[in-house]
Image (cartoon, rainbow, N blue to C red):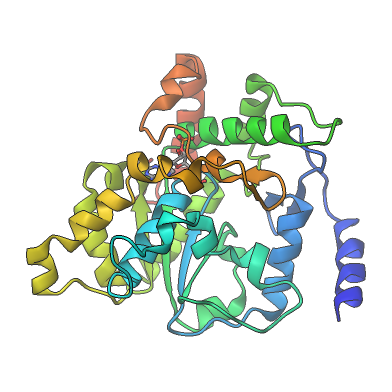
Length: 317
Ligand code: A3P
C-alpha cells in the first residue's frame, strides 16, 4: 500500500549516493547508475514495481531537453489525425505534456490502473531502468537524442527558469560553469548523458523493429521524412490518399516550434507539476544555440568526453 511504499522508498533513498542539487531544493540521488531527483526517482521505482505495459503501447523515451515536447506533439498528432480536425485538435488548448503524460509522474504512483486516452506514454528513465514489462511486452519504443552541447544549454536554462519562478527562497540558480562541470562528470538529472543515449542506442541496434532511434538535428532537417518513418514505425502509416493530401506536412506545420510556441496555452504560466510552466518547454528550438553560451574550449572538452564514451558504438553525436 501507499504508506508502505513511502516508507520503503525513504529507506532506500537514505542508502543511495547523494549528489549535487543544481540549485534545486532537492539533491540528486544515484540509482542504478543514474542521477535523479527524489520525485522522479519515486515514480521510476513505483513504475518498476507495478507498471504493466501492453504490447500496443508506444513509449516515448528521452533524456530531458532533447525534443520530448516536440516528439510528444508529433506522435499524438499522428495517432489522432482522424479523430480531430484543425479546430478540435487538443493540442490547440493543451500542452503536449498534458496529452502525453510521463510514466514516472502520472501513471505509476500507487496504481496499476491505467487510463491512457491514447496508447502513448513518455519517460526519461534510462533503458536499463525501464520497468521489465516494457521490454517483455515488446511494445514500441521511440527514443530521441540531441547534440549534448545543446541539451546542456537547454537544461541549464530550464533549471535556472524553474529556480527563478520557484517560491522556495533557499533555491539559488546554478552558475553556468559549475553546471557544465557537473554535466561533464555526468552528475545531472538522468545523467550521465552518454550512458543514457548509449543504453537506448545499443538496444535499438539489437532490436531495430522495437526501438526507433532519432536525432533532434536530423528531425529538424527533414521533419516530413521522419514523421513518415515515425508513423510507419508506430503502426499508423499514412495512406496513399493521405500522402496526396499532404497530411504529414500539415502535422509538421502544426507541431513546429513557431506554431506551438505561439499558442496561448503554451505561452501560459500555468503551473505544470507545481513549478514548471508550460512556456518553459519552448525556448528557442534551434540547432547550435550552444555557440552563444559555451566557449570553444568548453565545447571541445565536452565533444572529447562524448567521443571517447561513444567510440566503438557506431553512434556519433
Ligand atoms: P531549447 O532550450 O534549445 O530551445 P524537451 O521537450 O525534451 O524538454 O526539450 C526542450 C527543447 O526542445 C527546447 O530546446 C525547446 O525549445 C525545444 N522545442 C520545444 N518544442 C519544439 C518544437 N515544436 N520543435 C523543435 N524544438 C522544440
